[in-house]
Image (tube, rainbow over all chains, first blue to last red; front, side):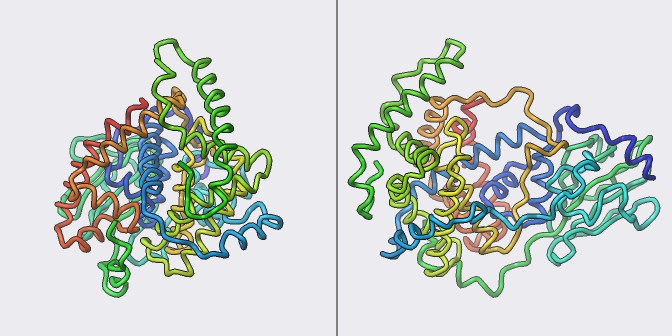
Length: 237
Length: 230
């Protein structure tokens, strides 16, 4: 199994652009920052492989920048600037980094290019050392702390039918290696297959090599508690 | 256009206007140098001194650790960032703290800003967005990393010029202003309300399909303006 993982490991930069993309409203959710983390991991991983979707996200960030610049002003505290100025002297260079640093790639030499970094940061260990559970379709749960989403790495043996399951929200499946066909479409590395709960489908892995995918399904739990904050006076833009 | 209610901005506008002119000259020059010859350059940029000035201020923060320039940027962005964080569910104090953090990031990362790649506003938005996800949502923000060996670079690197992006920005503003409110609202809520589309549907008391349809209509109008670079 380890041999197999390595033998097909040289599929990084030579790959052609994906032909199945996330929907535009998914890119909008990602660019605006309103997308939940599990789906954002899938989108970011697709973006690593898809220059044209990266450009779309960059364009949407332009939109975000304009909305920020055009928004109305809310007065800041009188002393905020002074406090800030006094902090500039000792400001550590890392202050205000955009996010908690994900687990670092200690073994950059051993990077498996079949898993782009956004997803690789969430793997418990390198892909080829993962302990897969299951036979025809093996899977590993990721982001297990999120009970509103199911995020799984799937390894489907050649010519095996992927499991069908029911879910309420949308399901997105990103191909990392190999390929599968579903409803007459072929999905290969970088491609994103989208399905909602009503779609009855049974994707089949292609002959020849294991198909490894990252699949996310589910949706945010319907709001109950924090609804109050949605109605604060500043929401009506 | 960097006037603000806080004082520091007003005193330096003259100086900054000078700096902006220099930056503009440099940017237009570099556009010309990389130009294939077909673009008309000069006439369109006269009304965009505002953006040039911000780029000049940020460049001065990066190069000279210029506190005055930083105070000017603070004067413009801090009240807007505060509004951004309040809309995203921060309380008054948390919003102030987040404004402070974003402004500190701007100070610390000023040298990473590339005026050829993005406007200051876009850059500040991405910093604020990521702070919001981290601090208010307590989530990580996964992003592609160009240094990742698995990263697939664009076949043709984006060759947008400063002038083209200026045109893009103006066009986007025009389309945004003309969007009917029911189409603009879901887009604004996505950027400013930290609401997924299903949450937007809930807030507006509309079926999810309707919200998505309105977003699609809005994006169909915005897309030509946003995609003008390609």
